[in-house]
Length: 433
Image 1 (tube, rainbow, N blue to C red):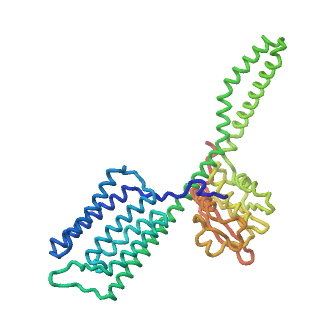
Image 2: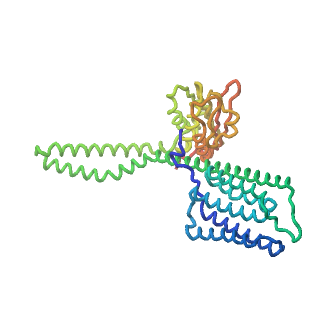
Image 3: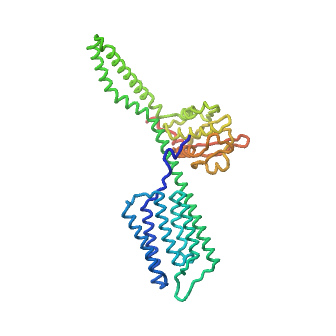
């Protein structure tokens, strides 16, 4: 199955909620103000108070403006988010520059806007912000302002120690930004894949509900068609000898009778086959899964290890049908000549095994199997990848109560093997109901 997420859902949303930034900024304003007040008035350290208060006031003013100008639920476009985070970076950088630069113990806080950007914004804006932060960190080493300290004492930082501090801040910023970016990307991929899973399940359920819709349509249309038929009979009785209308009236009556016959067959089909459509023995379910894949030049062999007399009869579950169908489709795509489907069941569990005679899973794929966008099997790219489709199949089957195991066959019989196991009670319904 091929699903193009960009076509289905559009590009993943990278808009940052303004209220989130506003709240973080108020925390920054409070923290900066408290720090300046403690250093200047509690410790009595000499520092450029006016410049510090101007910078903190500017951040508070910008935050107040954003809070008033935009609603709390407003989400920033990437360009606007970059501008806001860049302003935060410049304000923090200027404050650190006039309070000691690299010798300031709060210098590592320069990385916060960069981390936020990498966690929520496109890579282009984030990289630009990282480069700006790198320039500020480098500039800190050349600040003419000393660290606020006791009067008459100068805290001299050795150039080698400054280089070490520069390296530590840069490496911390780079590592934290990359980590935030990777976590954000994985969360976005998982969210998109789960959305695709829900859409697939919804579509499958819709297809299996069409019989009920046909019955409802037959019931609703029965009364107006009966009325049309009665009127047609009356018109035929009154106008049957009139050459101008006789053929039209006869056509109207015959077509109304034809519609009633069609609706009668639909109603009969639905009522007769309702139980069959709602419940499936395991053998019928497996045959329904296999049937669409028999015409692709690959032999699909079914092996039933258990007696059909005691086979489980379960509700028709679109998630199970789709999940097994997708696993079988992958096996057919990668097989050389044959796929084997084996079913067995006991009083406690039901097991379905799907094996192919292809090259099997590579070691790297086995470690990440079932994640979105695992791209290929070993030495074979005919099927175009094992990514989102296999993730959806695995997710749907696990929601039905199944556990899945992916492995390779023995060296004498290579190929991929998928073992799907359910507790038996999950695959059975009470047929007396």
